[in-house]
Length: 99
Image (cartoon, rainbow, N blue to C red; front, top):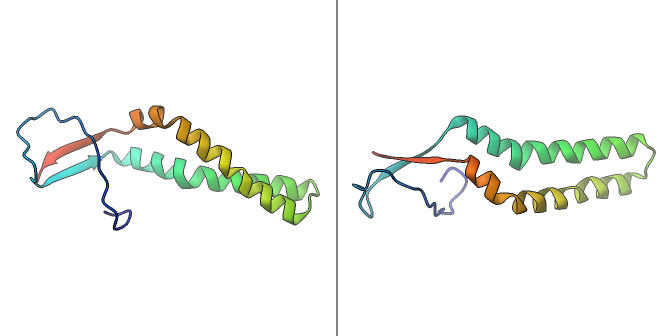
């Protein structure tokens, strides 16, 4: 629960049928995939906001317009990310190991 106190439900294909309900297991995600999730969820949106803000400010736009436009760029980004959820989900593979 590193992401907070909320519990997450994951559907993970398990090659070993010896797991029992309630058994303690370790769910593992490759570190490189964790960095990809961090990039898609936080770094890329930040770069988009910063880029739009800097470009519009340099182009002479009003600060309010530049600020609102830079925040507005997040809506299509996250909608697109949501629409591509199936493709993104296939890139993230979890593994289960007995503790």
